[in-house]
Image: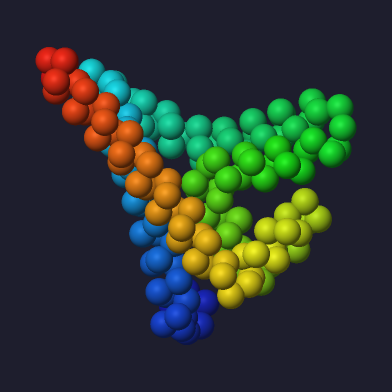
Length: 154
């Protein structure tokens, strides 16, 4: 990094490029789904921005608000992990931090995640999860788009 007079390894550069590519592909898939559901570009644009705002800004606050209402701590851990899995931006953030060796920052609730993320199969599981999200979203978008074409909606 030029700012701090430190060199960034090629591996680190490729690593961050890889995560940025996967995140972009998932959000493009989400945009395809939004575009296939809504009637015009403005609605799709506003909904896409609202979705991004929800996933990046509101999601952590929503997680805290929902999880603080649970009566038992035993329900918090699986719900927290499910919420993390359902948000692609949160999932990639948690995965990247754990791969960099800072998984302890997330505490005991993510102990199992640290185990699978840092294992040799961790990157492959990550790729499978992200590719599954992309394929499912594109498939649903295509199905909705084709259904609209057949029914004369578009």
